Picture 1 (cartoon, rainbow, N blue to C red):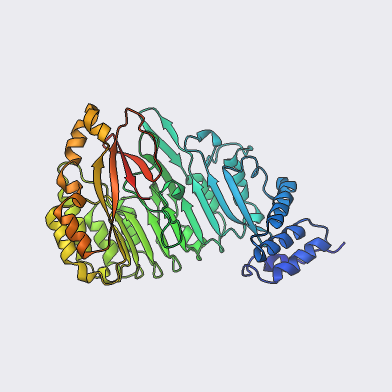
Picture 2 (picture 1 turned 135 degrees about the vertical axis):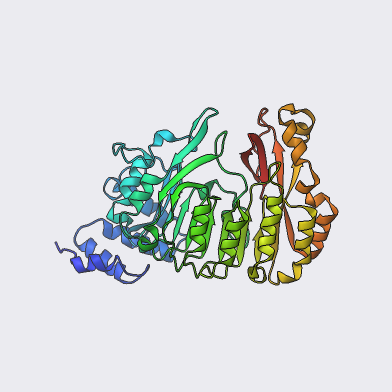
Length: 437
């Protein structure tokens, strides 16, 4: 029985996907009696014929037969942990932890390495079979305690992920599965809502230290951090990053991004709270000429109404307006005077194909009977929150390619039911939904 030369096994770690060297490696493994040779062969056949169901079935059966060796525990709950394979390695990893699934043990580095999907994921990250992972998508299980809060933790998983170089990692997604994903431009990309995911409350999901990411994964192209807290970005240097979704208004992190080296960035979607943070991002000389911008703002509470006007004027003072193809200002509420400034600035948006703006409405049943939300109903019924229904809305539509998003106040006492296209969250202890379908 022949053996596989160590130099060949090492060479496949740096070869481009689909390189003929994988076929040579697979043949050598088969001659050595290693079933991974069949894995490589099936991967390559499926890559050439992706719509062939017999090949997909054969690959699934082979992985199941050798799962204890190749990815122990990963098939115990396929709904939580899903893998795809390429060239004999795990290619994509999706962990869709149940929102209330604290018992899955995800990310708990002190927990014994059991058979839960979270434990399987930790083992997989340390396995040579995960040396060429290209896409890593995680949804953190959320632990909720009555009216006290909702929590999730990525820190231990981030630490495990960054223990080794990830030269083939192209997409990293933390909790993007919780975001609305309407199909646009032929793809269902995640969109930030001004609402945040959670059970009874906005979830506080700590991410941990990502400062090593930029060196560990120099080929990273897409990064989604849906609602991070407790995060350290370090010196951001990602020369190939094209998409960044950052759902935290944490000023320190946003300032770090504004100082980052992101020359290839095409899509930037961020949650902003302070006009100064938006200004730093828009004036940055080290962030690429992005074409798709989202400045997602939590709607103002009483006494903070001027904040939206300031944020909008920061945008209008920026030279970036001329390069934008899409602009998402979801959740932003401003005065009629500021909206008029946006309409007047329309000629500066030379490339703009779509502008997303939020307008508010009430669930009729809530407006008539929900006394508990009376103060919020009164406040969000002000004309500034429903520009579409005002003359300024028609002026905006005439000047710019507006697509209206609808934010709906719903009752948190009576079960109004979750309807397709509505993204639910909480603000000021009341219930709200935003339509991004």
